[in-house]
Image 1 (cartoon, helix red, strand yellow):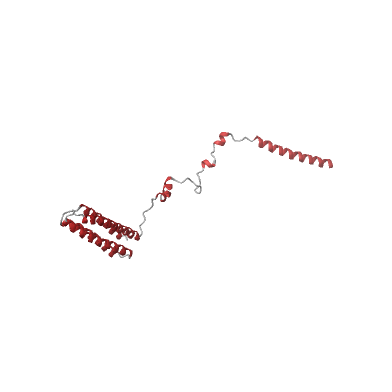
Image 2: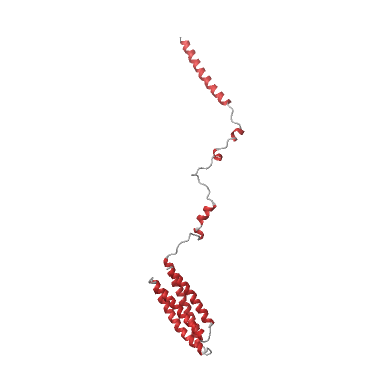
Length: 201
């Protein structure tokens, strides 16, 4: 009986060893995929499109849109209402400066003994007109600062009238004076722009 137990134990051990060796042998003999077979199936990274959540390079159009603010190109923006007032004030200051400069020229011509009497009469009148125009500039700036657009428009129009009166004097007596006409044209042009800017104030 004892011999039979030992025999059965040995048989069980040999059976276990045999089954283990058999599994190893069959697994080692299983054919591995050939290179052609492995390459015939594309890898997931090459066959599957990138997911929507994956980051992709920015397009040229998107890059251009992002760069617009950096190069100063933006969507049209309505200028603040005070912008027109600021520009108008600067233009009136330029008018005052130009009148003051031209007064020096007129004074020199008036003091020149070779200047005809008729021309001197107009030059003298122009100096008075220039003083009135400078006063108009000051009141015009004050009206703009007080946001009195109607008064500011009237002040600017008065400036153009004062300078035009100076030019008219020459046209009615000695004829056109080139210096005065050029000065008058400049004042009229800047004043017109000033009135346009006041419309957006």
